[in-house]
Length: 145
Image (cartoon, rainbow, N blue to C red; front, side, top):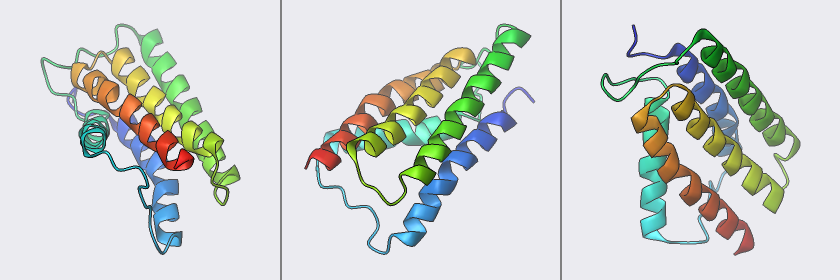
C-alpha cells in the first residue's frame, strides 16, 4: 500500500494530542490577535495539506524513500522532532512565551518539510513550504501583539 503511510498518521496524531488537550483546557480557545486573512488562509491550506499528505501518498506526486537508510533517517528524525514537540508542550503548557510560540511552530514546520523531502512527496513539500513561514509568522505576531 504505497499510497498510505502509517508512520505519518502516527506522527500527526501524536502532535495533535497536546493541541487537543490545550483546546479542551482553554475555555476561551485560541484568540488570534494578529489578523491577516491572506497569511491565515495560506497557513490553513498548508496545514491541511501537511496533515493529509503526511499519510496519503498520491501516485505521481510521491516517489518514496530512495533507500532503506533514508527511511530509517526519516523515522528517527521525525520521532525525535515529535518527542521534542511534546516535551516543550509539557514544560511550557501554562507559560505563554516567545520561546513556546516559536518552538511549537518551528518544530512541526521542520517535521513536515523534512518528511516531504525525505519521502520525496511533492505535495507534502509544497504544503510545508506554504505552512512553515505563515505558521511561524502568525505565532510570532500573536506573542508580540
